[in-house]
Image (cartoon, rainbow, N blue to C red; front, side, top):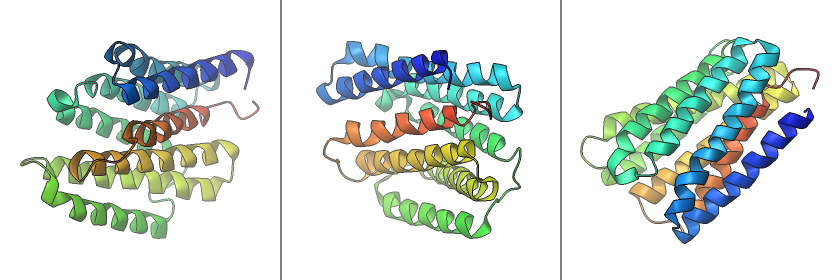
Length: 218
């Protein structure tokens, strides 16, 4: 990465750390500022790469990060805006999936796709008794799209064997870890140190996805 990209990545990591700390101590002024700031800086990194590469892949990743930024803002108030936040993050995953199918057919690896769909179904079955009325269909759709996005990223990495493709796969996997923990913490039972365990892989996911847009020679 060049110097500007390194600076953006460093600032994003610092802001993400502040966001996690604000969640852990429930200090809302920092939460209002640092939670969207971290994703905004990651979005800026992807946009800078998109401007250099002119690749549809990078533009789709940047669009996914924009939707994620909107979702981060909505989910500062999860009790009020959870469903709209879920919908916006669904759009983020659709955008990431669009990026990941630019140079690899869907599914990139059928076995991985079916395996992750099975994991999504198992998690949904475990969580369904605890879901509020009316949330079952959107949560099911979200889980299936997320599983498809992650499977595509992993299959694509195995197919292309590039550093950028591996970064995208790592990012997608971290997203699955974060969202799975979030679902169990919110709908099943409280997880100790949930903000750290959920947000650390979330910000890692977004950063790795942004890094996957970097020019091939950087």
